[in-house]
Amino acid sequence: MHDIRFVREQAEAFDEGLKRRGLPPMSAEILKADSERRSVQTEMQELQAKRNEASKQIGEIKRKGGNADEQMKLVAAMKDRLSALETAEKELAAKVQGYLCSLPNILFPEVPPGVDDSDAKEVRRFGEQPKIAAPKEHYELGEALGMMDFERAAKLSGARFTVLQGQLALLERALGNFMLDTHTQEFGYLEVSPPLLVKDEIMFGVGQLPKFADDMFFAGRTKSREDLLREALTYAEAADIDALKKGEMSLADVVANAMNRAPVKEDLWLVTTAEVPLTNLVNNEILEKEKLPLRFTARTPCFRSEAGSAGKDTRGMLRQHQFYKVELVSITAPEKSVEEHERMASCAETILKRLELPFRTVMLATGDTGFCSKKTYDLEVWLPGQNRYREISSCSNCGDFQARRMNARCRAAGDKQTEFVHTLNGSGIAIGRALIAVMENYQQPDGSIVVPNALRKYMNGLERIG
RNA sequence: GGAGAGGUGGCUGAGUGGUCGAAAGCGACGGUCUCGAAAACCGUUAUAGGUGUACGCCUAUCAAGGGUUCGAAUCCCUUCCUCUCCGCCA
Image 1 (cartoon, rainbow, N blue to C red):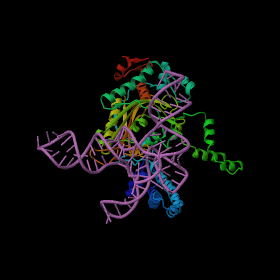
Image 2: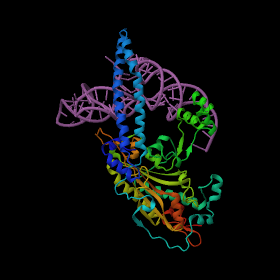
Image 3: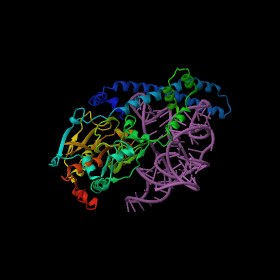
Image 4: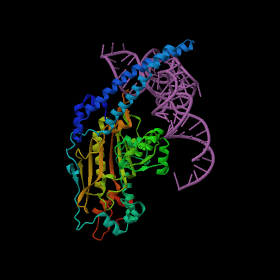
């Protein structure tokens, strides 16, 4: 979410920021609504002050047993105007808020222009690509080993799920344990085991809602769809139903109106990443600035609908509805986030280095950087089976964009003024894809897979899978 | 799932229609005292927004949203959350 004061004070910079995102200038429209809102608010507050004064007098007069008819008439006379102003103020405030929370974050100047991952700028590269004759893809290796089963997964859950068994299941567990140990013991992250089902406002806080609902799974606590619809329809108005009968209104509109009128019941979303609960740990809090940064890590399943990626990466477990990931989240003082971003990327890189997997780090282009982010580093691991680098980690500095949505602030000791914290998140790293990378990079001609040194102690000394 | 009790400032907690943004205590901060500290005493101590050059003034906020009323922390409705007992359950 953007700061209205930033739009007021630096309208050109704001529009320039939108332009780099490929969006038209919005400041004029926003400021128009903002100034309307303020003038309505001023009039409303003046009227409220008058009303409050008159009400106070009424109270005094009545206590003394006098006749307050005149004052009551006065208040009654301003009632309509006041409620109109209150409604208008609410609408305008919502309009301004709507703009501010639906536009993406302003990017740092160094973010390279471009539209997709091919425009990303490589910043560094590590490791040598292994020389493998006729490298196989991970699913060929896994299925041949009998430890990766897509058919049975489909039987249980449909496409984009995997069943891992035996040593590959162990490898998955070992990867997560290795990553968590590294981040907690060497880099000072606090291990967290968070809820995986969260409320609307939590998804809003990290920018998943309201725009990206289609990317998520929804866990209704309620009954069947039919029951839900019936319940909502009890809020339909008689006038709407009459209009429906006369054919003046569509069923869809009647339902939509009823839904709007029905009370909001909070159902829960499945987290798309542990960033969601970890970042929100500090929502609505004022943290002691001296205790920052806070660094959290968690290994959790991640649930994604992959709505926009039909047909992409359909083979294997590269793109799944459910996968494990170790996530890193930092909550920093405003002036520390840039430094923390570099540190976080290097924590993620350390994992790949220890696993001795070749990778490169790129800075995403303007058109490819996420909604909340000011700047994003992607780590791309080498996959011999695909003969290309593929994303395995994404580290973003969100500045105060999420903090504003979550109302997460900090305050220095002795200060009265609070500031919004900065939030950063990064994969440290995606476990499913790390498993793929290990399989493809460590594959042997006989179809077995050598276990990287760093993982052996997490796999009971196992040196080779298969 | 059934029954009940609640949600008030940094914390504890009073307040059931009118000078209540809210008693009291604790905590924190400033001061007096002291060589210094403690104790004691005195004082200060919410957030957001609007408005004016300015001491300021105004508005909103007692979980959230809506309603009743001239006026709501207080009454009504809905939602969310917490706790207790029973049931079920890893």
